[in-house]
Image (cartoon, rainbow, N blue to C red; front, side):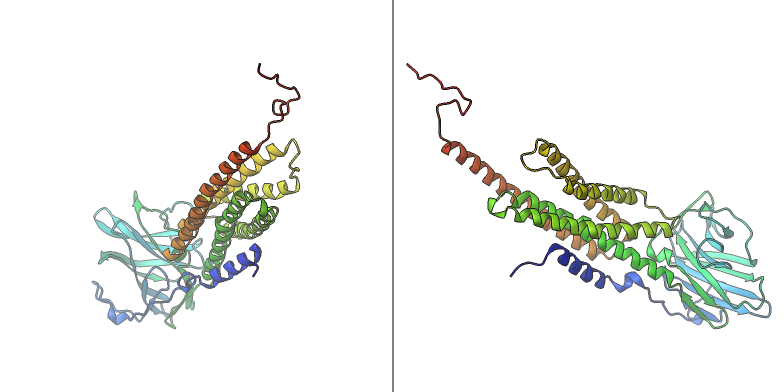
Length: 401
């Protein structure tokens, strides 16, 4: 039975990989909590409590609509030298524009400061949209607890956009940037102050799905199909019976990889344009280089000289050099992508197994190929007839006396 063409195989791999992406990567379930189950050092009780869907955090609150007063207790795990933040964004749903309360250790005590997050630049302490009546913080059992009572300037407003965050360090009394993992990027949503419900933002899940699709496309193309096409070309061409089948297999595999790689590259550009504050420069630059090199290879196919052409040697040097550059950069960028996306460890392990098996096959074929080539050269020398004309140079050698 004939094997399926590389493009069909690639599509099957894509379908299986995308369908197997762990649901925990695309959505996170809210933990449940009750205000009465938590005991605080200030002995305060709150009317509502929600387990927020990201960063393993909790929000307790009580809202007085008559005074537009909101009392909160925000709890999130963080290192002793880290920080936690809870914010209201009166104009949008993301970080920019949020009015933040940030708790961290300053000297030998915990403190809470306010920040108007108007850009992605380093934070500067400032006044915020709401009036802060009181605030405090404490650290215990690996978590920071932020307490505050604020007065909202818009009376009658009972649903607000909330943003929460956790950071690992503080330098000079200024919180450092948090990580840009899916949980950090998705930690936002709406909060119904009277209804006692919080809803996670759906935009984050859509973005995470795009990141997963981007990753799968590029693993299949640059990380699997391109190396496979190189192995086919290097080792099948040794056998005369495989000519020209090896060439068509090589071309179909590489063209399929290029088509899928362009789709992956395009999704990467789209993700980058949607998140100007988060830039993975090395991963992006390698991706651009891969696209440029692969495009050159596709056009070079149209300019491939015949075997007896005097420029064929130079074309081969160029084609092989760029091809091996794509091989190395493609695998390197796949691992850069794993570091950025941080999927479940099984995905990285699965790719390591695939590329290791492919590398092992290549090593075995390399040894076998050299054996075949050396035997062939030896056979050619032993069977070559002597014509008396100095190996065909046109002058007969004199006989020995």
